[in-house]
Length: 92
Image 1 (cartoon, helix red, strand yellow):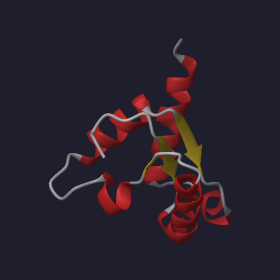
Image 2 (tube, rainbow, N blue to C red):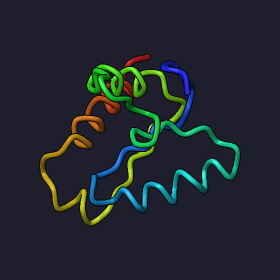
Image 3 (cartoon, helix red, strand yellow):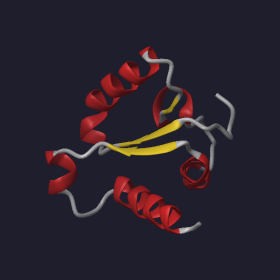
Image 4 (cartoon, helix red, strand yellow):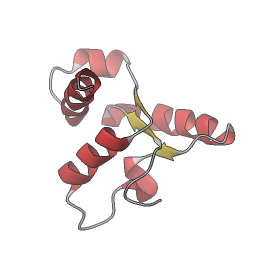
């Protein structure tokens, strides 16, 4: 997948990776392009923060996976992603 895509950005807590994979596969089965940090989204040596922010900025849809795991955690990379996506939504 190219660095700049109009894919759905799937954001999730690391404990929910299996559920996120199932969501990803269902979306792809419906011909929806999904940017997924694992399995090709982030490559070894990438500047992960920069690449993730770029993908959030350019995605067609930001899809947070909300679960008991995300609700139980007050900190995590997914929280930073969600805040950045919220800020993006406020910019016309």
